[in-house]
Structure formats: C-alpha cells, structure tokens
Figure (spheres, rainbow, N blue to C red):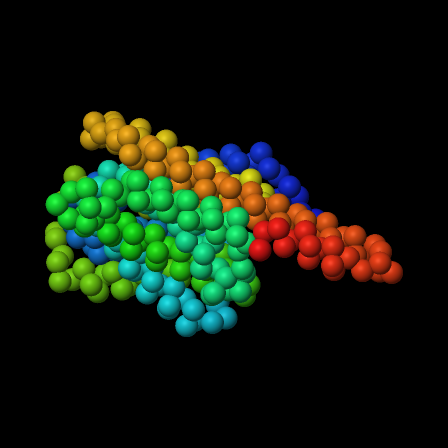
Length: 324
C-alpha cells in the first residue's frame, strides 16, 4: 500500500509543479524578510531569528505525526552540515545586506553548476564533458554578473559573501545526498535549523541588538514562509523528478525583480540579466542532460532484465560514453 502511494506521489507532475511554485514564492518572501532584517541586526542574529522562528513549528508538526522522526543515524553528519550551514547563512545575510535580491540570486544560481563539478571527486558521480563544459559556461555568466576588476576593487564584499554562500550550499547539497540514504527529510531539516540556530545564537551574543517591535512582522514572515516553504519544497521533489521540479527554482528571479522594484525601486542592470540568462541556461542543460543519461541507464537495465541471454552492458556503456 505504501509503495503504491509513493509511486502515485512521484507521478503527480502537476501537483509537484504547483507545490514547487508555491515553495519558491514562500522562500522568496522569506529572503525578503531576511534582507529587511539584516539592515538593522547582525547576520548571525538574523540567522538565529530565522531558525528560532521555524524550528518550533517544524518540531510541533513532527510531534503530531511521528515522534520517532527526530532520530538520526549519524549525528556527526548533522553537526558537520550545521557548521557549513552556519557559514552559508552568514554569507547569505551579508550578501543580502550589500546586494539587491536579483543580483544575489544570480550568484546563488551557480550552485548547481558547482555541484556538478564536485560530485565526481566527492561522491564518485562523474559528470561527462558536456556537463562540465556547460558548468564552465555557467561560471562565465557569474563573471558577467560580478564584473570583477570593473570597480575600485577586484570584487565587492557583498559579492564575495554571495560566492561564499554559494560554495557552502554546494557542499551542503552533496552532504545531503549521503544523509538522505539513512535519515528522513524532516529530521535533516529540523536538526539543521536547531543546530544552526544554536551556533548563530552563540555568535550573535557579541553584537546583539535589542529587538524593535516594528520588526516583529518580518520575524513572523520568516517563521511562516521558512517552515511551509521547506515543506512544499520537500513535497514537490517527492511527487516528480528533478528534471521537472528543479527548473522552477529559477523563478526566484521573478520574485526578486518584483520585490526589488516594490520595496527599493531597483531593477536589475543589463549585466545581471545577461549573466543570469547564461547561468540559468547552463543549469537547465545540466538538469536535462542528467535526466537523459538516467533514462538511458534505466532503459538499458530494463532491456538486460528481459534479455538475459544477450548482455547489454557494452551497448549501455557506449551510449553513456557520449556524456563522459
């Protein structure tokens, strides 16, 4: 029964697209709240608020569904992920303080490209020459956005922090692939927020600012959008393949442009649009290329299972070699 229900979820493409679109909307609103708050508080204090506002809601949801969901197999992996996540969220906060949302997102969009390059040496999931070339082209797009050397310094502080956050996110994603084999998604999400919140709270003591009541709506926005955005994100990836769901993540830029114009009267510059187009195009190519390779592998496995007398390993290897 559970198995069939799982399959039904994986094939519910339209619901997955709707959930991912809602997730992007919610998480973009969360980033708006973060950008508003880092103008008044340190990044570590805002990270603490982000985790403190979301972790209790997720904990209540887990308690209502299954108290065993808090258990994890390898606590050390969660500690490592929290440490990397602390650097990532600090970088995000600093980047949001210095850059507009659209410019920050353009940098963050390069994370899948870096994941493609690192998955080989770290996870043994080697990318073929086409995907490596696409990642390289995508990083050219990052250079177009950053425009290094065009100003008085090689790269701005906000851009550097954005790059730090992007690299940290790539390592988080690679670590998550390993953790997902033995721990549940909700457990990973909860302990990430709890441990990062604890670390951010300790670091924020040195530059703590009293809360201003006029900022409580933004804190509430973090709680609601952060919690439900993650749940929608998880639900979307359970109901459809990465090739279907992941491209919708790039619609973050639409919300970034809307928020940037409404709240700050800012529109992205020409270089940001060109660079983002290059980055997104490269990312989409990598997503669909990986999907295509997996489909060929599944087809080859199906043929070999029905034709045991005629081995298909050589044919399968020949097909996959076009991407290696």
